[in-house]
Length: 348
Picture (tube, rainbow, N blue to C red):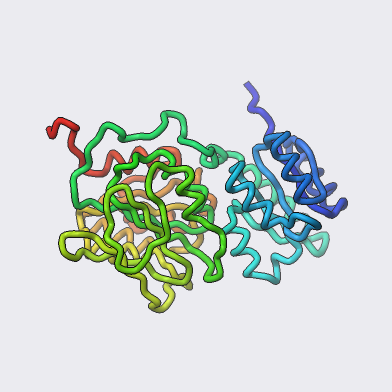
């Protein structure tokens, strides 16, 4: 049986850009389910057409692309590939788009040679986004929440690192985890001027208590804490409890928060009671820390290539032998529950 064509909505205020994008996608066998010239009509079109993927310009009249992107991420989650003429010169705009929920960010071409390369990149990115579309579901993946009937052993800690594509991956995982899970702390690469309420968006899709981390907070079961912008997040074991600490130490791998900083602290504070998870992201941050966790006796998981938006960080960890398990995004929640030490409700 032939797989159904990938359905795409194209949103761009330039008629020539829309024609070019449409031609590139249709030439590769995709279906353009509709096109819009501004954010407001684009929003209505997404609701009506329910596409697999959206391509989106940033600079548009009325509702701009970043505003629409945040609305898509919060209310109608699906992969969004951003194309912008400003992307090549405005690095901050790229980070803002990724933080707002973009799956990929591409710069519009300035000449015929760049157009040919962008056509190849666009097709690849849209197809990659469509293949991982399941992780953008608003609720739990098929099978629902996992681990509801388990009682977890005390003293365990889950630490998670992510970068590009992380918000969508985190949403998929948290939506499947039970509300009584041992405490979880997350380092998601974040621009210092982040305004998008990532914790609130994740909390809306989860039974867990998700919030930005604060300095000195005691961690309890059912809590998820996310590193705030421009702060490293570390975990300490004090007075028989895990506590969060926020620091302004030097960036690592050009990042603050950095995943390695969190993972190293968990290896020291929790050792074999920790479980480390490294998700999609560019670069190598988290690879050394995940290895340190595994060396300390912790269980470790890396996201697989097929469902990673960018396979840089997980690949680096796998190549170092840091990942005991490699799993697709729709199996990571179940793998976390499996790897946590637990006992049955009867105490067996």
